[in-house]
Image (tube, rainbow, N blue to C red):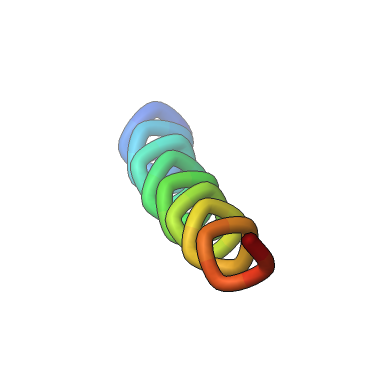
Length: 32
């Protein structure tokens, strides 16, 4: 049970970081 939730949390965290990275790239592109 813990292992399943741990894996799911890691996947969500990766998706969150990907979204933040994309937003940062989009903002820096607009600033130039």
